[in-house]
Each structure stands twice: as structure tokens, then as C-alpha cells.
Amino acid sequence: MIVSVVIAGEVGFWVALALALAVRYLFRWRRVGTALLLTVPLIDLVVLGATVLDLRRGATADWAHGLAAVYVGFSVAYGHQLVRWADGHAAHRLAGGPVPVKPPRYGTARAVHEWKIFARTLLAAVITAALITAMIALVGDAARTAALTQWYGTTAWITGISLVIAVSYTVFPKRR
Image (cartoon, rainbow, N blue to C red):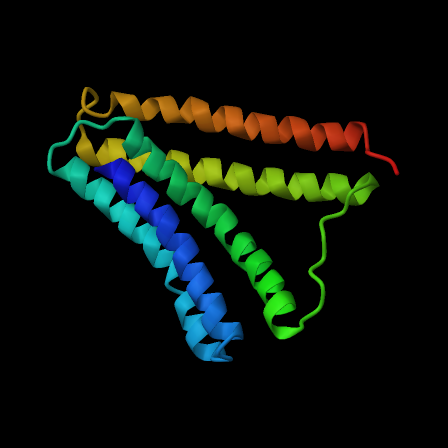
């Protein structure tokens, strides 16, 4: 059931984003579009609430409960940036706005960009770890939540990969 909720959350995120941008730029209802954009974080709350409710009802945690925490963590850390990116592209394509700025490709600017991505990934990992820790504490039964602890290592690997990429662009900056 939780896998379905996470998938529905991801689909809901993109549908809400597309609807908000369409209303904002095709119909020129800026306030309505902005209001719809504010519903995007509510999707995270629904995913998190369904996960906690499932655990509170006595479910044994499995990988899907951890996936829900990862989804929410990464959505919180990267969601605003993704919405801003989509908004810039929609403004350009649908409303004649300026061409969106691409990330830097070379040198120090690219290294700084990669360090910002690492910082977001680290934030996502911290949020995920906090949510998993809260779920474990909420259930209070180590046997029922053992599967959640695997996600600490998974998010650490993801964060480590992001760190290696940022360091590599700093030590070996890409040149034109």
C-alpha cells in the first residue's frame, strides 16, 4: 500500500506542478497558479501521514516505509529548486519570458554549483534520517522497524557520491 502512496505522491507532484503552471501561464491566473503551487508540499504531508498511519496501525516496516521517508526528504530539499526550474521554463515557453539560465559548465562556477547540489543532498539525507528516526521512535518496537535502518546507509551512499562529484569538480575543474 505504501508503495502506491509514494507513486501517487510522485505523480501528484508532477500533476499539481503542471496544473499550477498551466493555470499561471496559459490562463494568466497568477494568484490561482501560485495557490496551486502551494499544494505541492501538501502532497508530501499526505505521503508522510499515510506512512505513519500505516505504522501506527501495526504494520511491520519494510523498504517502502523507508522509501516514503526518502521521498519526503528529497522532495523537501529539492522541491523548491525543481519548482523554480519548471516555472522558469514555463514562463519562457508559454509567456515569452527570458531564456532560463543554465547551470555553469566549467571552472569554479561549476564547482560551486556541485557543492550546492551536495548541500541539498546532505539536507535531504538529514531530513530522511530524522524522519526514519522519528518513525522508529513512534513505533517503539525494534523488531517491527528493523527494515528502516537500512535507509541510513543508502542515504549515506547517495550523499557520499554527491560529495565525490563536488570534490572532483573542485580538484579537477572542467575546462573549455
